[in-house]
Length: 296
Image (cartoon, rainbow, N blue to C red; front, side, top):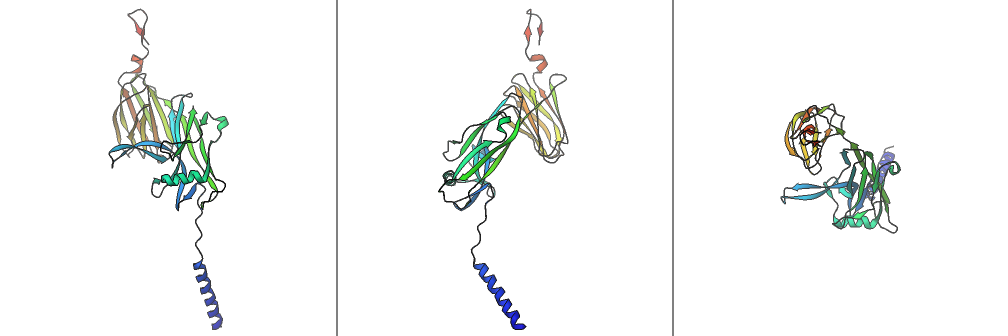
């Protein structure tokens, strides 16, 4: 009996040693990942944005994987932007090198399309090379509100040699929503009231200023979220802290002020007031019928 146990123990030990000598199986990349020159990247759609670089003390262009969300003023307004096919290392928060980008384009055929394109007011251009010579992008045009996805499919080119599989796919979500116009009782003070905004949702509001002018934004919001303002040329982040008050003066460059409110945890509530310098009821579309009487 003792000899039999020793024999089984020896066989088990030999099996463990044999298995330990086998080569480790390579990790299989996810459907939206590629392995290039030994590094694994996630394929994502993203956008370019201007950011301040503390090191160079200058504004630089950064490419970030993100979806497109924004508000529009009317059902016929056109929104256009560039969506880049990015190779991103989320562990290091950085993009692939130009050499790895080039290998990706040499290895894969890439197709970008729109979901539900037949029923949507959206169109795409073909993939175009960016000015840097290694990124590529499509220009997306949407007329009116639309929600859907921009899809990327990459398939292995015939004869290409790669250890990352045969290809994959990824998507970028798009949400274009019509903003709610804010009205004023006296023509100058516009309230934005928020109560228990749904988590992760953006709510859009706009004010028709009638002309370029200054505006004072005051009030307070509680909870976890953000309040941002866009006037057509400039973006302001007015609030993004728990329990912070808002007291900001802005000089609008366009006819509209567009606000977005995002809630992180269903708890954002409060009230914001926007007071304009020139009340719309008094200063917009004024005319004279006899040289003495003025009306709107």
